[in-house]
Each structure stands twice: as C-alpha cells, then as structure tokens.
Length: 173
Image 1 (cartoon, rainbow, N blue to C red):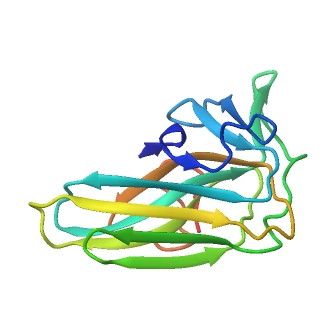
Image 2: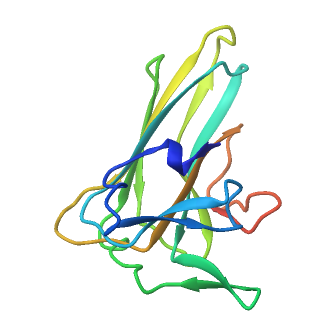
Image 3: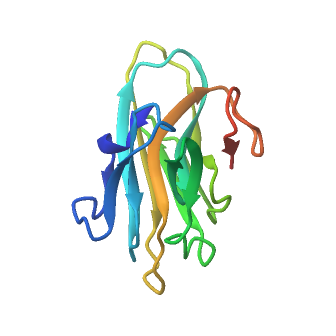
C-alpha cells in the first residue's frame, strides 16, 4: 500500500480544510481528514516490478471522522456532505498504455471502503511498471467534506464489487 502522506492531495497544507488525524484503524496510524473543500483531488504514482498477472488498485476512504470514546469506536459525521451530489472520478494509467476510468458517489458513512481505481495486467515480469492514479471531484458548484484518505492498495487478481475484504469489515466499491 501507499500511505496517504505519500500521495499528492490538493490543498493538503491548508489546515482550514485538511488535518492529519491519528487512528488505530489505519495500518499507518495516521490518515488525512478533509473537513470541507470545493476541489477534491488525490493523485500519485508507483513504479514497481510486478510478477505476471492481473492487479486491482483501490483507494481506502472513510466518510466521517473515526475516533474512540471511553474505549469504544465512534464516528463523527458532522462534516460529511456533498458526496452524493456528483460522482467522484477514478482514473488509472500504466506506462505500457493501459487506461481505466470509472466514477461513483461515495457512500457508507462510518465504514472503511476500498473504492476501485482501476485494474491492470502485467505480461513482462522483467520490466518496471509505472502506475499513475487520480481520484477527483472538482465540480465547484458545491462543497464536499468529512472524508478520511488512508492509502492506496494494490491487490493481485480481480476483486468483485460488493465483496468484503478478507479479515475486515471493508467493502469493495
């Protein structure tokens, strides 16, 4: 996986909009939390030598701000808004010319969801594969907020939508 701090997030340095919060729910112990913005954009790239096969790329997001109170998990939804107005766009390109583009509205507040960015295939295990990804909702007719950005995941094979990720309560969208 690629940790949220390793991603390029538009406006991440402006503390009026974005904060980093600690949470035991991330394997990296910290996530980027968006309070509110007009322009949501997360991008990054990975270059790696993959074995032959098919792979799926996901971004792990959470609507609401997870925390603990008296040892119990709670989720604050006060900033969650705007994700049902227009869909978020997901794009993936590879150095050998593969391209995926999908879109969906974010839902499932209070749950970590692995949203599919795209899939790619590797036929030559001896060369580096560069993967670029972009997740955005830049329609400036409305604000959106209340989302945690955790990480990018690359999993071998294809994972069907609606599947629950093994060993967790995560949903694949």
